[in-house]
Image 1 (cartoon, rainbow, N blue to C red):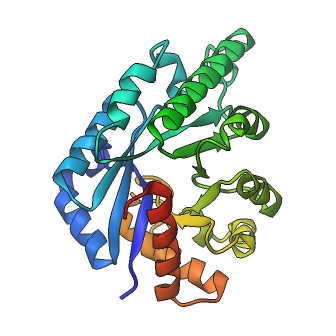
Image 2 (cartoon, one colour):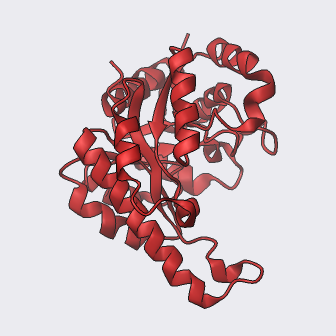
Length: 268
C-alpha cells in the first residue's frame, strides 16, 4: 500500500472537532501516516502542539498567518521561540505575505489602511524567519498576491534555513525561483481541478525531490470532494493525479514525497 504525508493541515480548526477520531482513522485507512498541523496564531499553534502530544502521527508547525498580522504582538519572537523548542514542533509557519484582500477592499476600508497592514505583515514575517534561523527549523511560507515582497524578505535568510511554498499555484518559472533559493513547493487538491492544468504543468516540471503533497484542510478539497470539507485522507486523491502527471506509481510517489518531507521537517 502506498503511504503519504499530509504536510499542511489545520487540525485544530473547529470543523474537525465533532469527528476527530474518525478523521484520523480515515487518514490511516487511506495510507496517510503523518500529518503536519499548522498554526495560524499563538493559540492555534498551542492547539497544534497539544494535538501532536496526544497523537504520534501528528507533528506541529507553529507560527502566525500574515492575514492576522494586525492582531499580532509587536514582538512575536519570545513566545514563538519558546514554542519552537518543543520536541513535537517540526517547523515555523505558516508565515509570509498576503495582499490579496487589502483593507481598502473591505467594507469601510480606506487606502490609508493598506500600508500599515503591509508593514505589519513584513515585521511579522521577518520575526518568524529570525526565530526559525535561531531554532534551526525550516519555514512554511504562505504567499498570495505578494510574490516580489515575499522573495525580497525571504532571500537574505535563504542560506540560513530552508522553506516550502505551501499551496503552490504559480507557474514553472516561479517554481524555479523558489528551488533556486533552496526551497521546495507543495501541491494541494487544486491539482485535481478541471481548471488546474497550469498547476499540473508546474508539477510535471518540478524536480522529484523538491515537492511535497498537502491538503490545506479544511480547505481545497480535491475532486471528487470539491465544495465539501477537506481532510487528510484526501491526500490520496491528490496523489493519484500527481502520480499520473509524473508518470510513476503511487508507491514510488509516496516514497519520494515522504522522504522529502522527512528531510525537510527532520522527522526521521
